[in-house]
Image 1 (cartoon, helix red, strand yellow):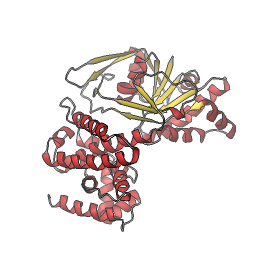
Image 2 (spheres, rainbow, N blue to C red):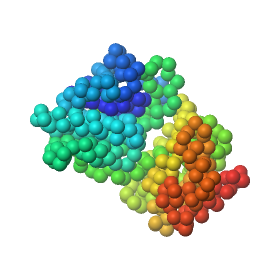
Image 3 (cartoon, rainbow, N blue to C red):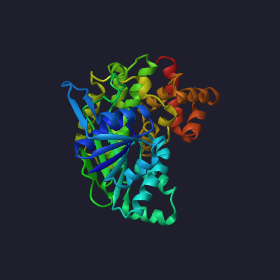
Image 4 (cartoon, rainbow, N blue to C red):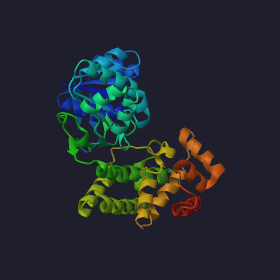
Length: 384
């Protein structure tokens, strides 16, 4: 079996590619970074280190790589003969992947290839659906009909913390032991891809929101509050009682939303939250708050990890007091090395909190959440 995976970065190697390889696939990574491609092609193997108490090491074999910039024709031919295609390139890079993927699928259709599934393993809502729109945007109407018939783009929810790497080996990667990969079987064409560790479900929205509003929301709150308080890592931040208490309140708020909206069992959800807290406290992880908090404008989007649950709670008559603290801390995130953080502070200086939330998230200055966030923003500025 052959798997084509776009993105040979840490998530691609340490999570998706590793699972594909251990499921019996030959994995062909596609990337534009020449040094990575050359190293994978030369060694045909790499090591994944699990950052837990046992310090387990996993050897990943039967891998190769192609350079999407210099070998597009080989990539197209490989896609045409693949059994599954996956991506882990980052949400903003999918548009760069789409033209080459479209050419590969077009070649597959020309050759009379059978059903194929393309799974975008990105930290976003509806990644595969977005990728399908981008791919079909490169095709004729007739080709789009063929894609609808034979090519599946099942959405997925993925979760694994990959901290900043300490490895000197270019290919070795450190990851946390926990992972979750959930795929919406309703988008699958043909047989379900046989991938160890994947959970197939009917309807992905509950699992995507559970992960986004628990893991990503909690991570963001720790990062932004921790940065405001002068901590360097998420692990240092969560050890601060004030951060830990705010995080507990945030998870109570998002938990109430998830239980009400999706029907999760409250006891099961509390257990899930406990697992996430344990992950954040993992002493073997060193997760800088500047890494976790980067791109604050995107993370302050209307449907993103902070404003998303806060607005949904208010629609249900529940006040998101702790989430408002997290939003206020995000607005105070300053990092000269992060272009979005620099732009955020420029917007705030010119437009204030209300104007910034309007510009970034389309939130009317009259919305009651704006006042709530402004009050917490002022208190943070006073050290309260």
